[in-house]
Image (cartoon, rainbow, N blue to C red; front, side, top):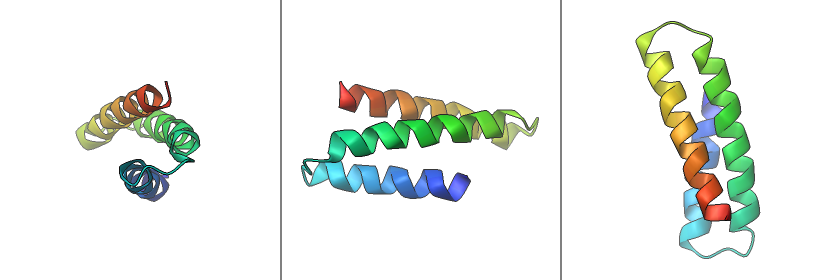
Length: 68
């Protein structure tokens, strides 16, 4: 899950920066994957997992702003 999240975030930024006509759809997928990653990370009590969940939720929020 973490690798999927990192990869799609990287790709989403690339698609947005080059003005891809599919960037909005890609950002929707990115938000969905970031939310799923956050949900998984929240299951663990380790501080780094909780921090990861926070950042994943922030990323999902920003992706949704790009879609709007």
